[in-house]
Image (cartoon, rainbow, N blue to C red; front, top):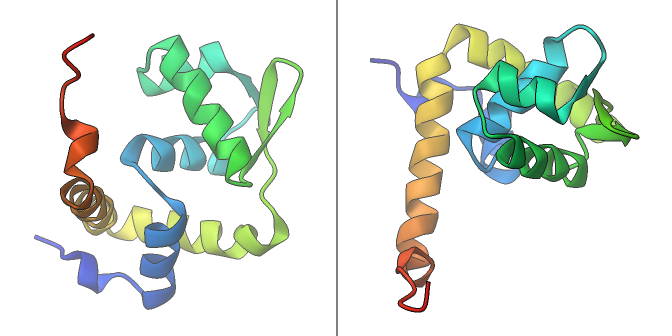
Length: 126
């Protein structure tokens, strides 16, 4: 099985800093290589098998992260200039080592969960 350590250092660093989850990655890559250029939240939800509300939150996070721009009810790939090449490199790495990329994201997510266990506790008043 491919290990996350097989990823180039710059890609690994980009993932750890900018990619918080696998759905975030999948949506970013969907826009990175997808046509047409603009998609609605509903189209993204259908394409990525997400609930519409989840897709909407994800798209907002991608806008906040500097990868997408919103035009009315549509979203398009519009990375900040500093993110263009790293996203290209990530897309290449993902095609070559899907397991390594997703494993790194999962490992980072699990470390964050262990660091902040109170965020995982169920609230009794829910």
